Length: 296
Ligand code: AMP
Image (cartoon, rainbow, N blue to C red; front, side, top):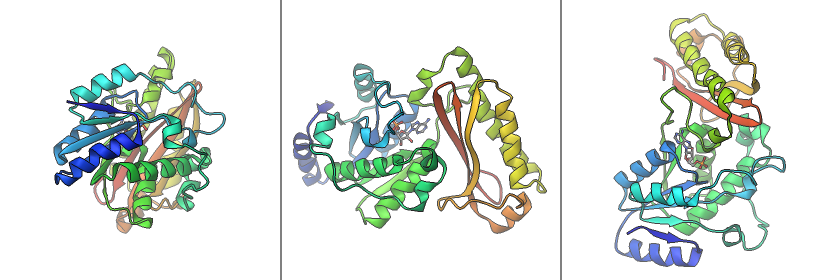
């Protein structure tokens, strides 16, 4: 029977018992409004652990002052239904006061990684993420925690968090789940109107074209590749680009624009091709991880 728990004390009591029984705990932190992307993490957690804990917490600390904290989509009944179907054991649904009884004086500072990509566009975002995830890890004390590569920079930040604080758990990165037409699943997709939703396909399409280019055109430069993606996206009238970047992963070093695909192949680096695009007021992100030699 799935249990819905709203307090730290009750969750810890339950999980201590489970841990003392020698059971392993898999943890999936989310902000709710669950979709197939979240479900894929829950399925993997179920497969690899005895007990699955899902948290649903829209964390105010990771939203900027002009972002969508107040209107972030929420649907508790739907989420509990999804959780039950995914055989979750515990759903942790804390209030903001439960997680932050007092305004935190100690927050996790994230280094240079938070100055890149989404960190540059959303100051304080990754500090907010790292602070809440550290707190949730300390509450749940999982053996493994599951994160989607839809948010590849977040995965890198959390892996650093675990490494720097020597937290005793394993991070499991999971592949991006997409709609049938290729749009990466996101709780924020509900913000899109019909025309924005149609045009948003440009994101994945431009990444797919880029992937093909990388496989086929060794003389292509990084700058030309980026430019082509930008042009493909901007052919759609409602698109406004936040960033299109190719960086090393997981260190997020920006590449020289004159570097060719041929040279990248020789370096055998792992790269992240990442984009963030506004359609109307909605900011969507997507990426592909590329491993040279030989594509993704
Ligand atoms: P969120 O509720 O958006 O904070 O996401 C919670 C977790 O689900 C994060 O680890 C996300 O990376 C992951 N996630 C969200 N969307 C997807 C997706 N389309 N595919 C895979 N994982 C996802």
